[in-house]
Image 1 (cartoon, one colour):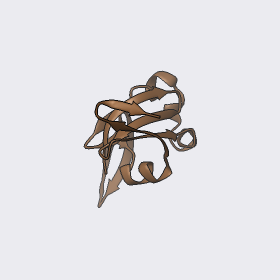
Image 2: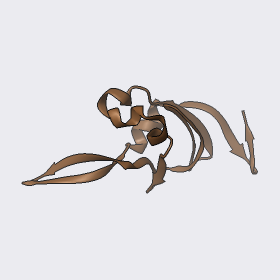
Image 3: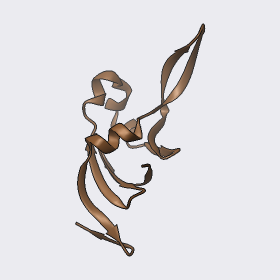
Image 4: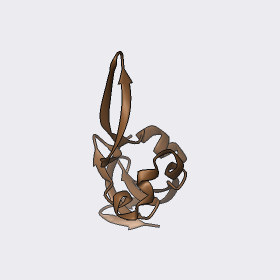
Length: 98
């Protein structure tokens, strides 16, 4: 399952279209303590889709790999996002039914 479109994004909440044509919403306010950079509304609103997952290219996280520390964009696990989301509708023949 992957994200195909950001339908609506507002501070700390996203509504996403998935590859199964479901429209699902996530409340992401819980991320603000782990990633304080996302507290800035303009930063949060710059989310994008990267390889079918929700990402913030403008938010860098450090990942330790062996003896190296890499700086990578924040990318949320799409499976976890799907499991934590709430179904709000399904796309049928180019129409969204809610």
